[in-house]
Image 1 (cartoon, rainbow, N blue to C red):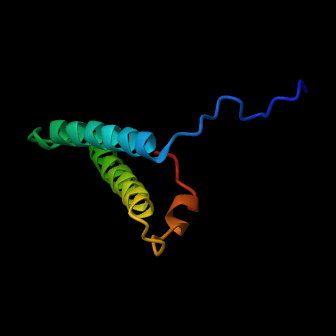
Image 2: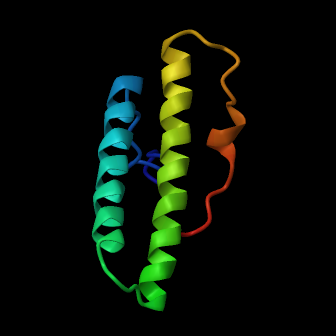
Length: 89
């Protein structure tokens, strides 16, 4: 091995940057959910996508709340949320 970590593509973000990226992703998911809910009928794959998007949105919202609490100095933020494994979306 050449001395580089296997995670050489991993970038450490500042909390503000991470929050902004999460907010952007949350907004993208919200937009897609609006597209789905505007349809009069959802196919089975679209129904599954809708449920998956809602779960992803909630997970991102939780991550944003953790960052907000850390920024505000609230040490009682539930850090365990970050380390939970996430099923494939």
